[in-house]
Image 1 (cartoon, rainbow over the protein chains, first blue to last red):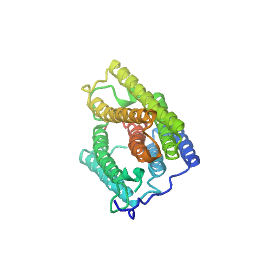
Image 2 (image 1 turned 45 degrees about the horizontal axis):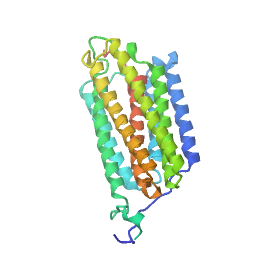
Image 3 (image 1 turned 120 degrees about the vertical axis):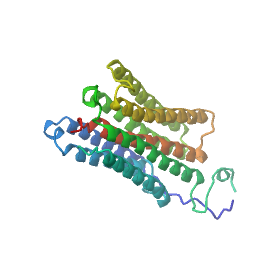
Image 4 (image 1 turned 180 degrees about the horizontal axis):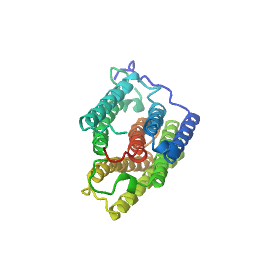
Amino acid sequence: MSDQVQEKTHAHPSVRIYLSIAAILTAVTVVEVGIFYIPAIRGTAFLAPILLLLSAGKFALVVMFYMHLKPDSKLFTALFTAPLLLAAAVILALMTLLGAWVL
Amino acid sequence: MSTAAATVHYTSTGQDTRKIAFWTFIGSECLLFGSLIATYLSYEGKSVVGPTPEEILNIPLTSVSTFVLLMSSLAMVLALAAVSTGQTRYTRVWLATTAGLGAVFLGFQVWEFTSFVHEGLKISTNLFGSTFYVLTGCHGLHVAVGVIWLSTLLILSFRGKLGPEKAMNVEIAGLYWHFVDVVWIVIFTVVYLIQRGPAA
């Protein structure tokens, strides 16, 4: 293989950032479980959107920093995001088809 | 060309072929879990007999197991950082921690499934049982594969075959492990925390 071809490497986050992300993930999980037990929110239509938003935040943090999508090649982002969007579309389509929109 | 460089497989994109292949695999896994989550959500609240999610799901227990899995992801990135910088001892410590926490998560799942069966929820009991066991069981199977994979890396490390030149092997195992983690982040929210009652 030619020495001219080199992997386009990108610096991974530091250990300090990894620890910070872990602290945020833990805090958000505590908030999620806390919200679940708040009667004023639990019985309302606000519960699902709030929890989905918090969950999406945790998902994004792990994917961007622990899976290194943020510093890595955009090719990997495309390889991951396209099927992820398709999967989301499948979920929405199937729920619509089977009349499961009762939040 | 150095010996270490000879083990790397680049493409015309400048990226390692194994990493491209693995991200493509993860993309296909998105569709697998997307289908299982879609099935669970589509049939949620449509069981004609109990037990229902409200009656049986143990949120405090699952919150702890969720925390365990999140911390295993932290241990995984610390293992990658250690192997990349040639810190053999810490590589072993963090790989063992990741695999150990994964095993603890599986222990929680086995305990949960066992208690559910004792409470009358089997895979054939109702729609909730069928979709719940298939979704969470498939995830658990992925965790089990991850624990075996990490244990293999740990053995390689003890045999002196996991130096900095093999950091990509740990990175790819890490991608798998973090993916299993993000899938659980979604499952924990949509299955355990957002419990929708019977459809009107």
